[in-house]
Picture 1 (cartoon, helix red, strand yellow):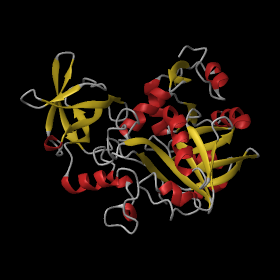
Picture 2: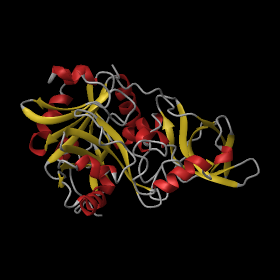
Picture 3: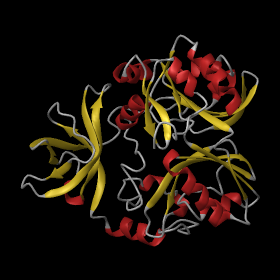
Picture 4: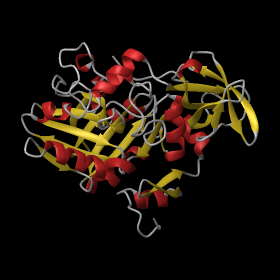
Length: 374
């Protein structure tokens, strides 16, 4: 896309005013960094609070008495028993068990669900929902009517409590309708950085006012996509289209925890989602390769796409995300390796510009997650 055809979020003028370097991302012109720079933005979020514009993501509302049961037929997650005021991480799967997208699902009311899906997938996700839920519940896209902000970091609760004191009583994955600056918003205590924080769905017309108000607080800095990526990588969180995609199952992606207990092979509502038979077979029999954390033993960033080999120079996988972790103070990566090489502490090698870089298979997250669980 040319810059003329890229979409713009409601905060576009604010990004330019703040001196952001703008780049194309998922069809939008988005800030990759501000004058502070990626390294300092990353560390500031870990130490204080960062404000992210994530309005490019897709917000969708489902309405209907059977909305939860209908959505369960598309995801391996317990939606029927999801309490009002809570949200869960979910995966859309295809008939082969591959991941079509990952998303957040919140229950607004007994007959109302609120979904947040990835920006690059939101059009196909909307069609997927309309195709499978038509006649069962109302599927309402909110792409043009709502913006989405993420306030992340150890000071996030203190900052947002100045606008809505009740946010301090929320715990990780709680979701609530709240008024901020006189505006009706949806607030979840969650995020994509591994830090405590909130995601705020706000009507488009109020987004700029809310963003300016939050940025006026002394603890808050604007943070771009560059630091968002390094923060989520340190937290061991997947990026759709990189660490998982349509040919990757939840088992291969090391996301078996995202299959709710009641939806597993021995659960009360076992299966019933696309590709369940293959997913259950992989749980039972194992997989050829799986996603692992990787720590390069040299201070050489190992980037996405790098080939992974064993000690005999046989190709055993590839890197799907990689770079430098500012909080870790070292390079880090995630990727897929053959299962026999996936044991913790196994040594593998990345091919970087003709050189073999030794890497150790490690547990994720690389940096401890600090979600507030009460």
